[in-house]
Length: 399
Image (cartoon, rainbow, N blue to C red; front, side, top):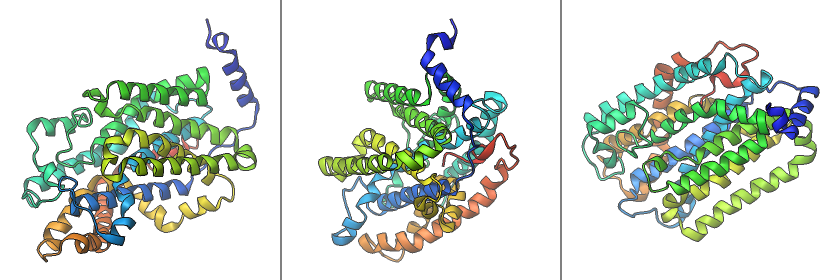
């Protein structure tokens, strides 16, 4: 029995989509701005963790503590990256009438070329630093990355560090493995899009992902953050919605999107008030869904014609940082630790003063070093040749 006969509603939806004129999605500078902000939140989160290691239970004092409260939620930036990744990677499919350009083999080869070389260079460099000039424990969060074994190294080179739950060598690499394995679900999600429609697929993926994550929460498989599958599908759905309903987005959906964004932020704040920031890391699975909703609402609002939000997020400084946000994400932790171990700690600066210095001068140094890494280890592997059918997503990483 054909898929059309099995689901006449999906057939009617697909027929309507084919009969309506479809404009190809264009390049959205605000996506780079969103990446930049997400990457900087992660950097601030890890500056916070290095100066005030969670293992020691210390926090900034007074007004500084209140103003840096958000930094404990750096994990949520990964959710933002995953949604953006799904959106960007679906754009070539949207622009190609719903079909993968060149099939899955070409897709995964391009993803591998884009993601893996910078990752393996960063992994090898992080390993070298951990064995040499950053090998001495200094009472920072980096100390947890130094206690690695041969199996930890192997897991990282096989992209299995998320499943084995190892935060050693460089403790941000878990999300690279998570996103890499999500790429292999891309054809399945597209198949479901054709069978039951993008919105139903996204809803189903979120339900299945969360059910699997909650059932396997304490297992090795549960460490892979299975609920991110739903956010990846949601980002892909967002691209199809932006193409299918461009006029409705601006005319009818704006109030609903603003309400969804406000409600998602309110839920995150309420959860923080309920559980406290010190328990946030144990409850991230519940923060992730409202974060994904807020990300989708932001993308759709910013993609509207003459969107003030889109112009703000597409500001040149943010777009510039977003262009090398993957390198910034990969290498910011060792660069933070270099600044602390060779500048802050030798000067005898501690506590709040160390936090302020690292968040200002240190941040500038980290960004500059990350840009150097980008020029040397990421830029040579960018997919710069694109056909019109491929559109924007072919060379935009998930982070």
